Length: 169
Image 1: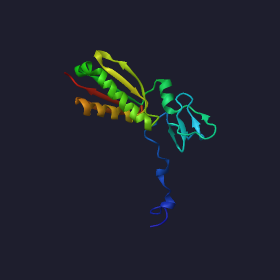
Image 2: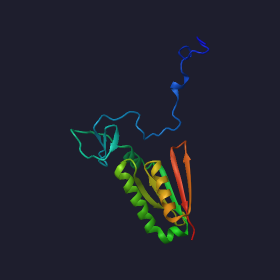
Image 3: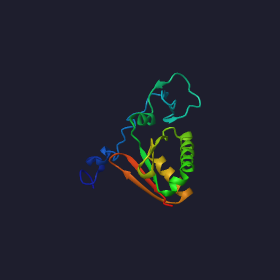
Image 4: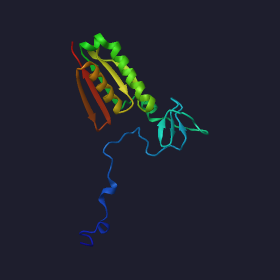
């Protein structure tokens, strides 16, 4: 086969203009000029990724990191909602588990942070995060430690993950 029927070169490739399915407004369209440092948290964009500075060589450009932008705009990448009678009795230890999980992830990945904890209706806790993966990992850690029911919902349109954990008792 040759020409337009079988020759890829003659037809062209139609898959080159594939649009991304999920658009995250906090994901940069291009990489910042290196080295760049976030004036809010001190994270450094170096060697192609955001990281905590071990050593910064030379003067850095001021560029706010995506996590600090989300915090400033109060636009979480994920929300974890905790509820149930068990939560009321074990609130402090569950909050410590969440804090430990966040600190563990944040040490390696500066863009994975907790934005805050709010009281929700009927004694629920609402925890906001700067990325999509930390709420799921935190919810799974709570489920492993305390059982209960875990539900994870991804919202493609808003690039948000909602994680729900509940345990009655």
